[in-house]
Amino acid sequence: MGESKIVHSAMVTYTSMISLLTLCPPFVILLWYTMVHADGSVLQTYEYLRQHGLKGFKNIWPTPSALAWKIIACFGAFEAFLQLALPGKRVEGPVSPSGHIPIYKANGLQAYAVTLITYLSLWWFGIFDPAIVYDHLGEIYAALVVGSFVFCIFLYIKGHLAPSSSDSGSSGNVIIDFYWGMELYPRIGKNFDIKVFTNCRFGMMSWAVLAVTYCIKQYEENGRVADSMLVNTVLMLVYITKFFWWEAGYWSTMDIAHDRAGFYICWGCLVWVPSVYTSPGMYLVNHPVNLGTQLALFILVAGLLCIYINYDCDRQRQEFRRTNGRCLVWGKAPSKIVASYRTTSGETKTSLLLTSGWWGLSRHFHYVPEILAAFCWTVPALFNHFLPYFYVLFLTILLFDRAKRDDDRCSSKYGKYWKMYCDKVPCRIIPGIY
Image 1 (cartoon, helix red, strand yellow):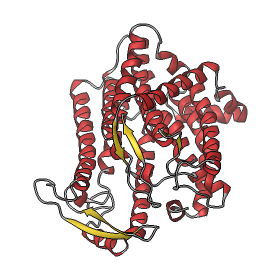
Image 2 (tube, helix red, strand yellow):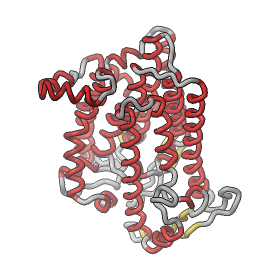
Image 3 (cartoon, one colour):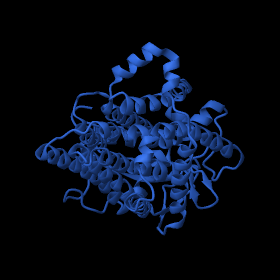
Image 4 (cartoon, helix red, strand yellow):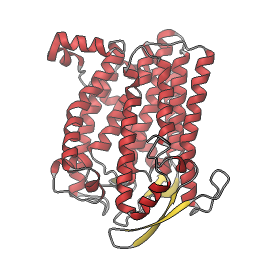
């Protein structure tokens, strides 16, 4: 099973699988209900459930409507069409443990531009009112919960019967196979990459579309958009633009190159991203905060700076890899470690590990500006309620866990060279602290 065997023990997998399966779907629905119908107050939702028990919980849970399915189907089909039809540069992904090199078409930025222009045009010309999406959000999330689960079953069956590449296989355990996934690079036909669709074109794109939706809904309700909502939306859209600008770089990250396409990653991208990641904006729709120009600009500039640093970290490492270390990092020749490792087929290869610039501050320094950027687009909600900050908390836990998994993976891959690297860059994420 390769990578995923080392990553987590069966016990951790069972625990996280059972908690994700049982806790995440109700959490998504409760988050939506609290933000939209309970004033963002966890206490209010708790009181309602305490008084009405299970019946109250059933009342909260929306039934996926035909309209919800239609919205999801149209959005999914449109994104799949753009992924296949738009022109893009041919990009090679990193060589997999079995020696397979995935080929991609980098057209994310074009798809992103076409999506937003189309969505805004439909609203502008009165063809479709995005407020409808907000009004039926609960039904859409309820449909996504079910539909994504079915989709993960399809991935499991496909992994058994028709894997797309040599990077697939069973652990011999149904639950682990379903949860972590059977295939590293599942495709439909030769060109339709499933993980690019779930992670980038459905997950990240729905985040942008919903951010715009919340803005339009607030405008239709109040005749204006509060500065808090503007700061939130602008920062999210700039962050997502950065993501699509750098999408080819994302294909070399852990999500794509190491985590298989199973429930863990695909359900997360199809359900968790559109609900949890967009939740600060969802809260602001009914709670417009007026920050005043000075504070709004301060938060905006701080957020933009964090997004830029996050981008520059990735750019620095990519440039270093692309030029094989023959580049300047902060105006100087980079310091590096030349690490050799063996592939599963027994070949010896070398990698360059960058130990200067942003990457000399800590081994995963790029997570610091990412968490701070999320804080910046949440803080316009101020501090009346904790729930808008759930995303920041979740992101922090996710990235700290990812940093640990990545360190464990690198340690087993590079051995003594990784130890040398850690001696040179001792902090994992926060320079001087952790």
